[in-house]
Image (cartoon, rainbow, N blue to C red; front, side):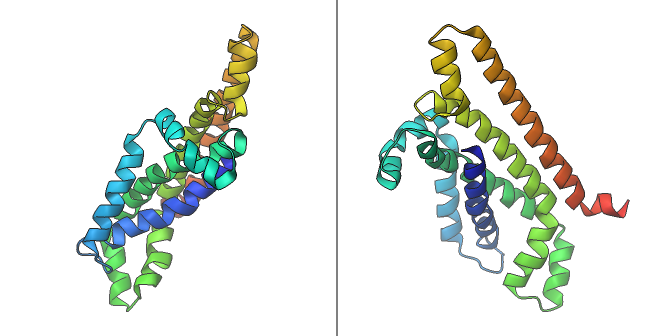
Length: 203
């Protein structure tokens, strides 16, 4: 559930983050009205608490998958909650690229598409990976919350077999598993980000 949601959050978040940058004022594909609309929609999804987002998207999830309960159904609100957050992180990562690198590519006659693929993404990749790691960690906590409303996963396990059956050991085990998952994801993400960072390669 978390892996699928992370994959689709990245698939949606990266293009959204790029669009937020290249449609802004002064950029090579300046469409300020589109940039403002995208930013407004993203901010709405980021502002809504996740538990409210789950309930709000119940009809959408049922329309798409035929059910609003279970592990598969929980991926829809998970993606809706994480993708806008990750898109903002991608936007920030791209905006922090040294302007001189972009200007050098433009001076060499690089097309907008080339700048995106050969400058924006490679230069911002360490920060993008770090952002995806943070998003994945958030998705782990979101998935536990989704389990409380029939989303399955560790949250559902902790609720049904731990809380409702007064089994403190089960709740403790679920909590430990969540901590281990978070630590593992964070370590892997940090490792990949360090490997992609050109400053580390130069040293």
